[in-house]
Amino acid sequence: MQKLLNQRRIAVLGTHAHALSMTETINLIDERVATSQFTQHVVVNAAKIVNMRSDALLEESIRACHIINIDGMGVVWGARLLGHHVPERVAGVDLFLQLVSLAEAKGYPIYLLGAEDDVVQQVAESLTKKHPLLKIAGFHHGYFWDDEEAVVSDIRRSGARLLFVAITSPRKENFINRWQTQLGVNFVMGVGGTFDVVAGKVKRAPQWMQKAGLEWLYRVIQEPRRMWKRYLTTNTLFVLILLRALVYGRTA
Image (cartoon, rainbow, N blue to C red; front, side, top):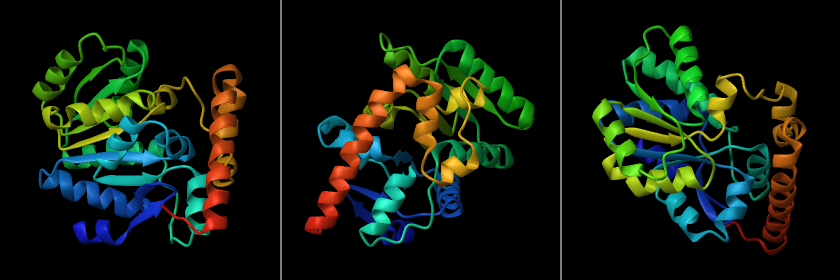
């Protein structure tokens, strides 16, 4: 499987990623968890590629990851235009749901970290109802910055093997990279706003919008005051970076 990771590693607009399908990603993670290989995971989208250029700590945290999936159709299309074969988008929400199913089937305990207290509790309840054999080793809200060490200790003591961190970027990436060796888990993944989706607080875009690369627009429609400026800025900068790469033949 390490050979597959090496073969699928590509350079995309200043970062590296793995051109993997969802099935390949799940199989890789399963193998690494089963053999107790620590895996730090991240998905990259247009916003992260843009923000990495001015945020050295975020760039360091992403480069430290063992598996870097491509989330966001803009990055998928951009990578393809640059000559890379990218089989599909691996959306963080979908990967999370599939890994929860895997954890239930294999008996891997999980830990849920992030979002507001009532939201993460709703996520735990929802997952337990849908996956009655799932072992939830623990959960904690995402507002713990005055005592990170205590939360890390709780995760380590919980016996969890998979950790999902639903905190905004770049905080989640930097938190994971800062504490990676002390978390005591086999796999850790940042899942952003996934808990809000699972809890029913935020709706996902229809399938046709996801496939058309318009999921960001659906988010803006739902939360215009919070999202419009972020997406307008990062999407515009991403397009400019991609055009520059296409004109000057730069993929890295």
